[in-house]
Image (cartoon, rainbow, N blue to C red):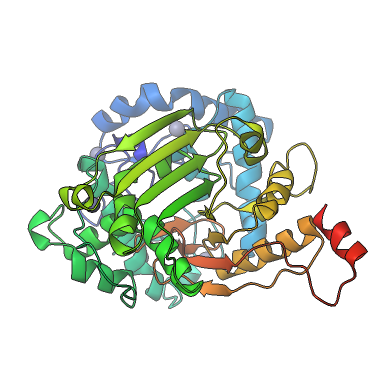
Length: 430
Ligand SMILES: [Zn+2]
Ligand SMILES: [Zn+2]
Ligand SMILES: [Zn+2]
Ligand SMILES: [Zn+2]
Ligand SMILES: [Zn+2]
């Protein structure tokens, strides 16, 4: 359980921190702390090989601490330093690092301003932040401190709780109605407090919104695209992984929200998945109205899925935090998105893409232009009112991010301008 996440200034085993706790660093790597000997002993079998790998790198570099003299206040260079060391250690340990082990590098104990790793004082409120002597009174941390504290509290709360898909009761709409203003107002209107999962309201909102963000982002986008009045809907979820499979029951909300919709099929497509079909039981109200809901899971790249027997043409395509722009070499073997995007464009239906930051939505737009070699007008590109409300620490910006924080909405990707000649459009469609 304790290996689900890592924070620099807490005991890795019992997650205790604060003034009363005397944390002791692991003498080998100096990158992980414990509140007492027992907790260190308890974790040692799981930590041993990583600790030794870090030590070997230290000896090779003739330094007592891996981050000595490497610190830089420039955020991007600092990320590079940390990632390079993580890669080196990963090669040495010759197994994939676990998520919390990666976090040991991403969120290494260092001054929040200059990234110095010596003579640090820890923040008294959040367990994520430290300061060097020069930067003890920095004000820049003030706004983030409570968010980091919330990240930690949620990590602990979610670690202890069972996975329950929240029950959000939306009545079957008989007329077209508009979504509430944002995620917060949606939850306030439709989630009954009697089903409290956590004591604190803020934790409940964070937890529920992690599930609701996917179907509600779809509904929000459909609203921006002038609504949806067909009786059938096939949704392709591209770049899907196990996170999308978890809690898919919640998609029934779409059947409730759209009054004309009778049949909903969600197709999850992504190479990390296996293959299968799930017919989901719907509620009695849906049964009475003859509404049905099913899920196809396709463990393939989009291009492969399109060639398979299972392929069915979509009404809308959506990708959650897909990061299409992330591959550096476009059309190289590692860039599986370029081929997929060309096939997605041929479906001639709306495409919705979410990302963590506004900068990423711009990068996604640029990448689509590059892959399809044309300018594609975007219907909406901004903050997503239906993003998750659960913050996650972001080592790249040193702030926090939210799932589906921003959203890009295209009516379709096959824009052929009227002023173009016939030959031009042919060329662009290839
Ligand atoms: Zn402890
Ligand atoms: Zn160690
Ligand atoms: Zn400093
Ligand atoms: Zn703090
Ligand atoms: Zn229902």
